[in-house]
Length: 243
Image (cartoon, rainbow, N blue to C red):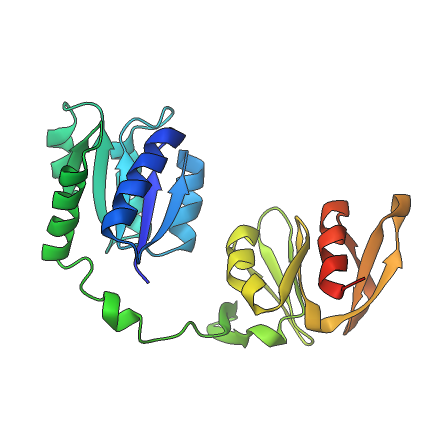
């Protein structure tokens, strides 16, 4: 599926651009970021055909961010969006595909989309749609890359730096974010019981009372581990279990 990112610190501007693009590209999947930090996380965990980037992001100029984005998304088209004309020369020095001035105009957006098509950024849309997403997660195992079946993963925990991916036999440390893993695995019978824990529901064994009238979860293969269930997620978990 075609993936498009919109990076702008103003929500109305993001919403307007997303709406206009969705009218031209209804099949596209849109992602948004409102800061340099959220943009960095977005481009590290997704591959985009196009990134619409506001030049004025407050703490960092968009022309600087564009160079950083190139490291993670070398094949993506970058389109600058701004209310100012003076960055145009710098923008094209950075190899951006287009430079759109605010306020937005549908015909101007359409012209940009046509330019992207002409330059081949959407050329592989139909080809990539032939393949379903594999139910596997790539992890480093020494000098090898191991592909774990989703259903071999028992639970994942986040330790503020890395995600620890636990199977029945091994634990792997990777720099996936919990947000990215949740979006990928929650469609595959995984449930985020806590901000730091994502579990495979197929391995649940029992819920036990925990501190302050809360609950903890015990999983198969990890009988000595009690994973905390947040109060908000306990409600959703009970609904899933039809309790």
